[in-house]
Length: 73
Image (cartoon, rainbow, N blue to C red):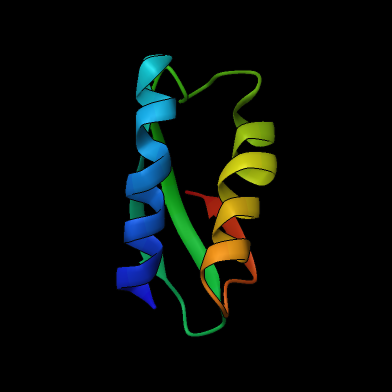
């Protein structure tokens, strides 16, 4: 599952990089919790939580079966 999550993240990464940010995959737990680290302009951005939940988590849930949630570490 981790490989599929990484592939999905790689597809959305250019959108984040266009705004000066990025996302790094930290871990995918057996419980379906994906841990990521927001970096660059995304780190500390007031919209980061919305990007995480409405963007990254939504896409990963659609594209990778078994993803339950995405959390920032």
